[in-house]
Length: 359
Picture 1 (tube, rainbow, N blue to C red):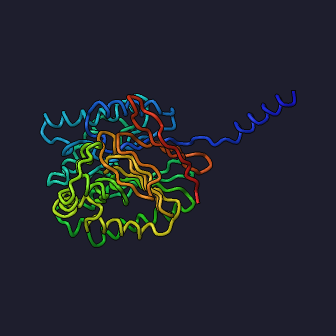
Picture 2: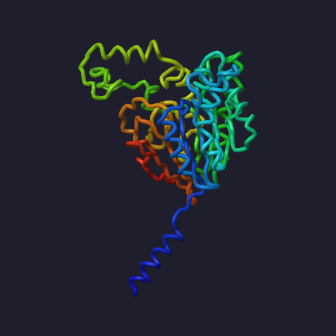
Picture 3: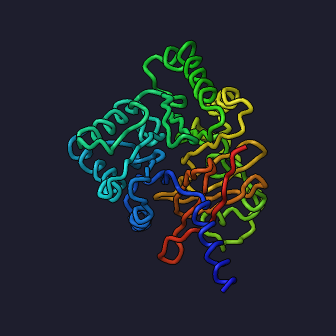
């Protein structure tokens, strides 16, 4: 009998003191192409909704290949791509926010500003308060949002800083505009000291995927494995051509090693300073990554519709180069419960979980 009482006591103790989920956040990146895997992932992601406690963020590249159509027929077609992403969540009364990626900005083309505004206007035209485009289309942000008393989000449009077709680049990207943006970032950190702060955008500050332009010895010796994993046909010399061309001729501002992108990373890191409770959340590279390097932490969730290679690194605590998404539970003790879900043999399963404790 004493043993029975002890079991009941321990069970009751655990129920009382177990951490509770205050807010569940789903991060799905680069989901802007309707395909069988995208459909399956979105259905399964909607199944993870906790009523009244869930929000969803689509991390950019919401419409492949070149963003929202501007003519009626293309506008309708591209609108259906957006609808495929949010409909299952709206049916469950879940707030859905879209951030812009480079493909939403006309794949960094000259019509980029018009297309992100068109995408935002379509969402507004649905007259549903659960649908949001953040920050305001064509602006950099940042927008500060509270998930709980202990967790704050800072959302911004990273493509704004990489986009090459601003009408007046100097006034859009330099001087007081740039200075004010990073001052606002620093202010958001200062005003939320002690909180976990999520910096949410399309572009990561670190990645070991395609846009990171890191190549392994295997890429040089067995280049065909980038196309088909079992293709171990040695092509020394020839295999080095692609890494060389990709890093030089085909290098763009969408790659982390490009001077424009590097400058943005440098400025953001300076604005963030030594704050320890920051997690960057992004898409862009088509895979799942959890990067931890001392105080730096980066989630990449960019495989809602596509997948690509991820190179190995000691800083990668988790990586998956196929389709999937990220779930982040904000717990009532201030910790964050990070999970990655992947598609495995026709089922979406939790492949990784880690508690991120506040410093």
